[in-house]
Length: 274
Image (cartoon, rainbow, N blue to C red):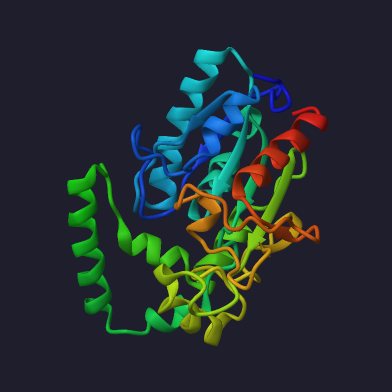
């Protein structure tokens, strides 16, 4: 084991919507073990799959406190995917500003989605019924306080705008964001239906989140793969547990394997003293 990813503060990885942190089916694929093999102390948020931002932030707070207790560190670095980035921002602005050293978000919908705006125009009873059914399913899967309707609502541009006003970008910690995109409807079969819909309303996207919505704080740009496929919302958390292509990147915005991308983020955090 080398220490290239041995940070000053432990790393708290915060998952996105629809999944949970599980021991034998890790949301983050190969990434945590790769980071640990290079010296990082990795922990997880353990929030609900479809909890509200506020409810999930409370759960993440407990996870964070446990990390500080275990490690003796005064703060953590947060690395968050998708909606987990919103929950991390909320946590910072609601009592945990002195316990967070940095926040890095990946494919987080910071500015909501015009696609969700359109879908939320459906009769309210219909949206509520769909949310309730999703809540029942996720409660069976382990959520303590599922709230799918709140998840839908936070993704609207109206609620996102209010969220950004109520949860301003911190100016006393490192805050940065990254984005990814796919290149067409058939880039990832998981998102073959959602990609063209999101593209119609929001433009370039990763199959779920538009690249425009991913911009927050110090935005590090949009990346894609070295082939025609691109990198999807699922690819960015290593859902397939394999590199995208054997073709080496020719440009800074190209990625052939998601694991080295995360190692690069953590190495940079270390170099910056985090």
